[in-house]
Length: 470
Picture 1 (tube, one colour):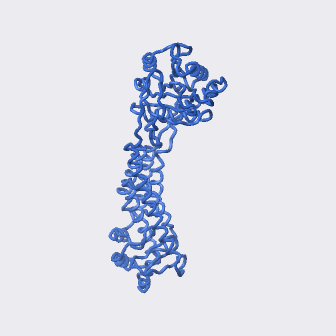
Picture 2 (cartoon, rainbow, N blue to C red):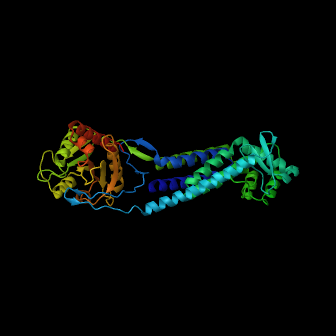
Picture 3 (cartoon, helix red, strand yellow):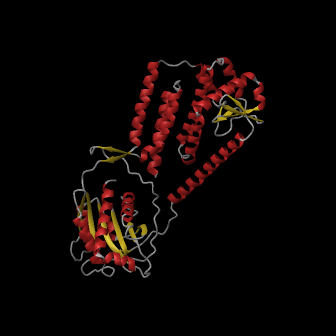
């Protein structure tokens, strides 16, 4: 999640700088509008998109949108000779920030809904029609502003012919250009991306560009430039327009006056600047995307069948996990290479297993076990990983995938953290997968059935294929 926040802030920031230094003072208003809408959309989507590249291109980033909130283990377990110690605190800094984000986002969303409701109430009032506009007279002192084809204007302002003519023509442009859609779009995004400072700058620049478009087309319609400029200055003494509407007045009056009187740059200059913006933004977009490397190498996995020899584990655990491990090894191919710590009934110490894994240096090791509990009703599959390892994020993702692929056979007990010898002392991503409870009647039937063991092994293999393709 933090990766996503980082890339959206950086990409939006770079995009806004492109606008600020290249497009801001250009009278390319319609292109600027297109740039705002496309760039903000792509910058927010880019980090979750994947671009397939050749093998030579490295993977830039891996982004996980699932909060790493860890479940506490409810059962006291003894696993491969090591007591499981669990993390019981769910109230982490991440959780606090997540709840704070939700609280503020809901606040912004409620404000948006209230503003929308207030405007809808205004549209229910009596109105008259002027062309495509539905004119709603109000008694407040706010400037004229429009919402789709509704124009809200102070009744007294209509007595000033020059002012009312300019306002109506200006708001008619907003109506025809459907600027309200842009405003609602950016306001909705701000409800959820309020933490990104460049979203606020985007909103300000987008609304200002709307005013530039409306000013330009209003003058082109035949209204005298100087008269219209005086109308803009006069409107600056009034309050700002209704939220979520496109208003005749905009706080940066100076910018509007300057832009009205500014001459267009040459066609060549505009073309060069637009081309440079498109090329630079394309680079920003590509940088922000998650690259998916085309990988023809096999996923190397060490399968550790727990216990063995004099260590039987829980009941007949050592035999069940060995059978599943052997089936899994038979499924190995050019995509997934399986290496077993044991292929027959033998006793291996935890240190021997650890040394073997560290020497082999696989992409992942998977320790297979069967669970047990004093409560015979407890059932399901669960996985454990070391949340303090350097591979904790990717290991969590792997564990979630492997558990998900077992849900046709067992109920879901989720992914949890534990202090296990193998997990703590190996240098590669490692998972301890508990394939059901031998103390539960239904789970035991599945685990001791040879056909079901084959299905369990195939489900693990399918999970490993998905991991390889990440």
